[in-house]
Length: 261
Image (cartoon, rainbow, N blue to C red; front, side):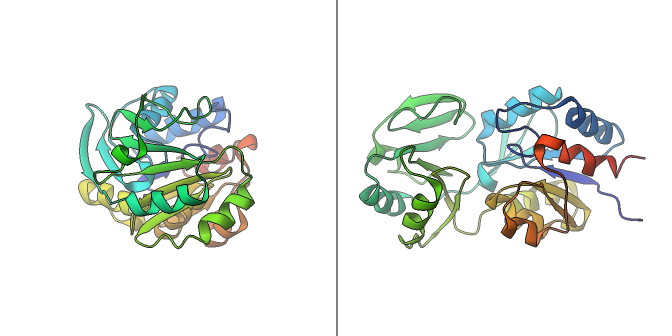
């Protein structure tokens, strides 16, 4: 096999860390070993910027570029420097969702800081500084990302409700729970990584991408090699070049070890 990645783009939750935000020694060792051999490691996540730093601190390095908020934010890691943000008018989409789920929790990203929220989210679901605010004010200006959370709904019920709303002009992802990410239309982890590659003088063909969620779909299709985690939904596995073991079995470590000299 002559191909070898020059850049490894990694989802966080369900890929680098498990759903308790725990990093296994095997995964950490594999990431650091590949990095030591000169392969660039780029975090590409739905998390906001503080969540990227959380996983980088677990790994023990801060360098290069990061892709946060499903591609809406590309930034330099050390020191923190915004390279690119993409914003959109979220007022209509948020209004439609709240008409159907008036009790929903809403969070709007404050780039590099955290979130403004209408009410407290379940512990640990969003990170960074949390500021209480009114929804109308939160979306009065263009934003990079909105999270809508409905803790009292199950995922299937919430997904059906959201898909019936016709959220034109936005890109949206539904998580493993009743969690909705709203982003600018055309923005994804893949578009964020395009910016990273342009800065680094690389192309998609140089990239190994690994992820497990619906928000990894575009990234796995775009990369020279896209690998889905074993617990990924079938539709995500279908667009990947390969499928590794689940996060609980250190699937990321199994994939990365293939590329060590």
